[in-house]
Image 1 (cartoon, rainbow, N blue to C red):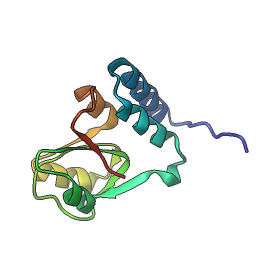
Image 2 (image 1 turned 180 degrees about the horizontal axis):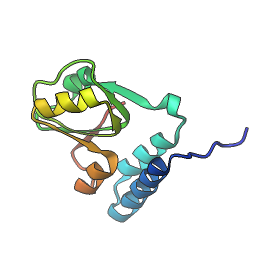
Image 3 (image 1 turned 90 degrees about the vertical axis):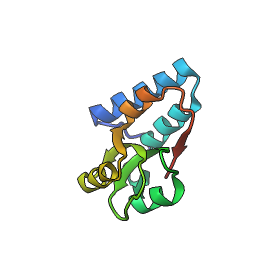
Image 4 (image 1 turned 135 degrees about the vertical axis):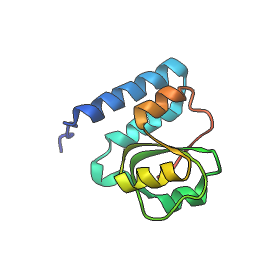
Length: 120
């Protein structure tokens, strides 16, 4: 079966940039995230805020190679990076004192990838 090619230009740019950051900064975390984004979309991670609240720590940094959804609540600030986040999830993250970033913003802010937790 032939390999399907990603047609979303934002997604392909993100994958290329993550691979480049991985090589430049010797950070295998970004290569792993890029590989997860190359998978079929039905296999992407869909992480609810309740899971982030269970596994993250106060002031922690969490990356989701997929989508963040708004089920659950956060009671402490967390920096969350994801390819996409629902509007309600962004609002809940920011109301808890955290920040919701895109994958590229998150990767450029922490190019070494140290202290980052991958969920999903």
